[in-house]
Image 1 (tube, rainbow, N blue to C red):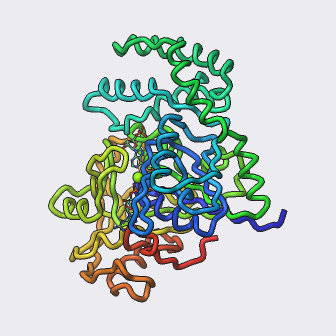
Image 2 (cartoon, rainbow, N blue to C red):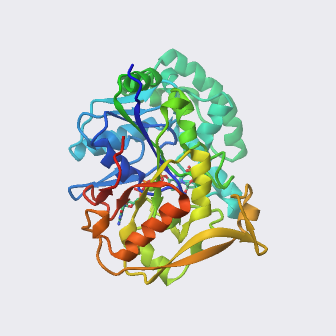
Image 3 (spheres, helix red, strand yellow):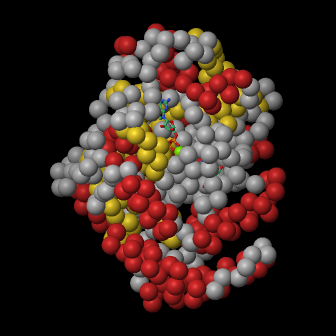
Length: 430
Ligand code: GDP
Ligand code: IMO
Ligand code: MG
């Protein structure tokens, strides 16, 4: 093995939907392998290539680039029906990628997990998380309760049958408590057995695969889903997802050594959005929020819900930088701010008029945050065809430079539209 490793982690640094899919697709063009390491089909990554829109939820965003290996690593939760459906949709769009690999250690999401997700949300009433109802929480819950079914077990009929019986022993108690119809193990087995055999050809030990690629000096991208503030450890718990979208989680969720993740590109939307419930210190809810939502098409890819809108939040980015190990940033959706005469950036948090120096660990405290803003002059020129930093209007340049200064991070990329070509690279990726 040569000494240099060629890996790059691409992670969300806010509440998701920062444009990770777009940037991963862009970076895939010079990569050999793209690895999704956590989450499941709660993610929605929209990519536009030659005016054609692709919506990916489970399959890594390297799939649109011929010749790239795409890996679904052990940290993921995989709904096999959703996976096969996504393959079908891609095939209808002319995309067939034979180099797709699923970890034998990833966990399966069954329909029953989705049902439970929905039932729990209803039971929580006004305190509901606003999940995507894809069964993410219940599936990760079963993983950590040690009753989940791994992909490698799912594809072996005898093992699958035994594991399913164990799973249903507990799940049926819960189903009864929620007033849901009991599940018959034989019926479930029969329903999923044919699906399992369709999944089988993709299944392998992906830890080995990824390590071999890295050690052969291949260019390997790690594609995150969600964002740091939705992290089960470092996010706005319990209004979070059930995995860790941080770069710190990559070694564990992929089966590689920590030293193999040393360059971490945090994707930063030029403002902030959030879908679902939970505190949001810089949220705005007025005509301007409406303008940004319409201009940025800020509606959920998976659930179509309107995304909540807010100003850029630097204290949150500093938190993301620290807990996720972000070394570089890509600022996306810059074009959406065009036409806003005065743009605010939150530079500090105050509580009871005192500046605090951390991201609070509980939502009651986060709800008390009074953001401290600075105002930046906006620009009105169309920037969607800009191909270099120098071509940006001075005020847009100043906005990017201010983000770089406040976060003390390298600005590697900025993006001025959804298309592949609307990506300006400032620093080489690998
Ligand atoms: P992800 O979940 O982080 O991959 O982000 P999403 O795909 O859910 O949301 C980002 C949305 O913004 C998608 O619809 C992208 O096509 C779009 N997008 C990405 N970058 C830009 C950009 O620079 N400008 C504009 N206008 N849209 C962008
Ligand atoms: P991408 O990869 C934005 C949010 C949900 C909810 C919370 C928990 O597209 O950035 P879950 O279904 O995971 O149990 O929901 O997390 N959420 C996302 N928000 N983008 C995502 O993914 C998200 N995935 C989950 O809205 O608040
Ligand atoms: Mg998304």
